[in-house]
Length: 243
Image (cartoon, rainbow, N blue to C red; front, side, top):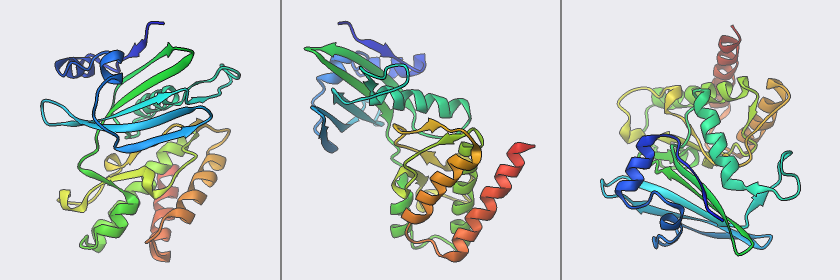
């Protein structure tokens, strides 16, 4: 079966082509080692590699074999989980919610298995919120408050569109490192990653309650005052978006 190959724009296709990586076969056979060891389940696997391009920029190359999720359109056969993640990356972009930059998605049927590839640009100047909380001890109180406010605003925009991340932990929220920042953080600086489980919910209240319960329970390093800052900024942003 010929591969289905999707590029979000011509610039992405051109950059990959300049590195001889604009095809499923080239990406699948690229020998770049594992950045994250493959995760094996249900007779399939999914792994992540990091590759440096000719211009010095880096990409993450995610490959999977028979790693499927069921959808209402494909309740029996399922679809590659990377296809759902690719579509969710584009969905957030349409709502002006910052996330990963997708460069390529492709899948094919090979020897009875569904194989899929997702390529995204590396967030090299960012760190996860969990890492930021542990390592950026030199950040000022004003910077820290602006970061919490920016995350709250980004979460509010996500939930305003009734989008539930479903796995909203500190390791899945990426922020610029404090050493890279010259001023306050803003909403546009926040990146949501790991969108395989993102879905449309019934109401803003339900998706917000689900995600924020996860975030508050699983985020270390925030005291009562910082959680209050988050809640106030979240409610203020939701009210502003409803107008």
